[in-house]
Amino acid sequence: MNEQQIRDMKPGPTMDLALAEAFGWIAWEETRGQYKYVTFQRPGEDEPYKRSQNWQKDMDRYRQIPFSEIDRMKHVVCGVPEYSTDISAAWEVYEKVDLECEHSNLRHGKMGAWSCTFDNIWFDGAHTAPEAICKAALLAIGGAEQ
Image (tube, rainbow, N blue to C red; front, side, top):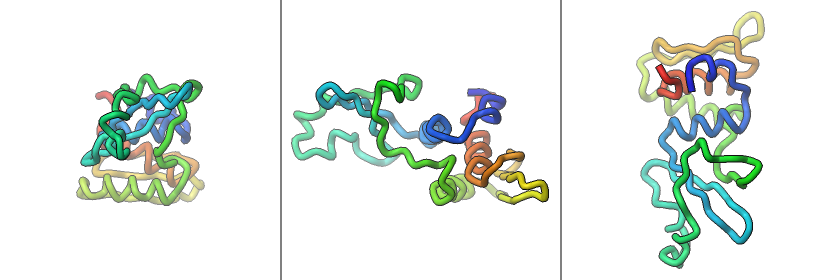
């Protein structure tokens, strides 16, 4: 995804998945009968099939998939916070990226638009604080191809 695509992205599930991918999450497709679920493994966590008591038997139902294969018409997607629309989830993004920065700032401008800065990377003109935080974070942590 390039910088302009990030700037043009609308808040919602696509942006939330982009953040999960940028944070290093791994997507797993799980087949349950005729349904396909996508669950996620965060850095430092065990594979999702190991959450089951019979994990050695259940691991056959799982396969890693690239984020580009996630299709909301085909998959039930579980476990991704609504980063781009929920301020409490967006604040987690802000705190995570802020730890890696020397300077960060979130502000509401006079014209009603939100802006967010992480070091020298900024996004302004967002309608909501979560949108500003998420877009600035994607730009700052390498969600954009240079």
